Length: 68
Image (cartoon, rainbow, N blue to C red; front, side):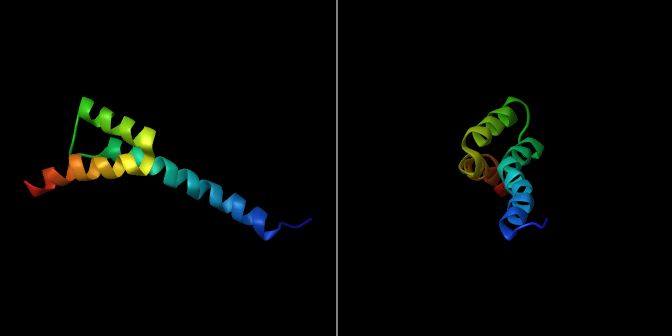
């Protein structure tokens, strides 16, 4: 009983998809640029809107702090 290429792709691809899905949340929560309730707000934005929310967080929340 062997594995087909599709079964292997699914078994190997699901953890990668999960990581890509969860990564914006962890990046927002682990950031040192913001703190407190602001961090929670950005986490919720990235939780609800995934990468779009994270990009908004990066360009609105993190980028201005790096320029100072």
